[in-house]
Image 1 (cartoon, rainbow over the protein chains, first blue to last red):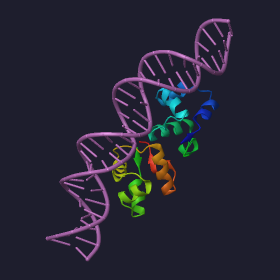
Image 2 (cartoon, rainbow over the protein chains, first blue to last red):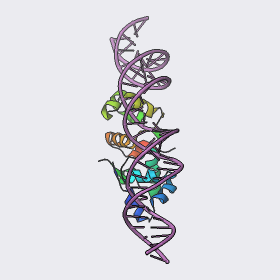
Image 3 (spheres, helix red, strand yellow):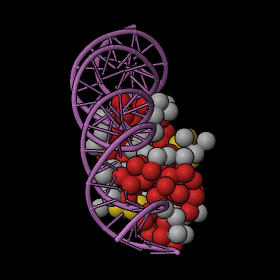
Length: 63
Length: 63
DNA sequence: ACGTAATGACAAGTATACTTGACATATTGA
DNA sequence: TCAATATGTCAAGTATACTTGTCATTACGT
């Protein structure tokens, strides 16, 4: 599962820690998702989509 | 996290086992998601959305 | 009424998604 | 150049998402 987190973050000049704070998760969680160690849970994917005002499918893609 | 799985399944006259087969997960997993014991993983949510040709947000909703 | 299919649920095990804490390296800015 | 910030990663613990197996209850068809 690929994702555009790093790009979306860069567009806003947010650090991984900034994003983590806004999502109320740890910085390591953001790093792990960006570096594709694992996928977020569905609830976290919803929070991410909500924060960026995008659809889940516009941020995460199978493959 | 609520979901419309039961309705989508009923529209197609599929049993929980039918749906489980199509998604390659166990029947208990479908039952647990429908009865809100837990949410699917993001990859499984994508498979579900794909199977029903809907967006994740049209099947699962926060709250 | 009977047998079968469907659903709900529990237990115990494994895999994955998270946590905090720590540390090394890379990047940035004054 | 130096210090601060950002990123990547590891370890160990907890929570959640899955598995198989099993059983009780409900609904359905004849």
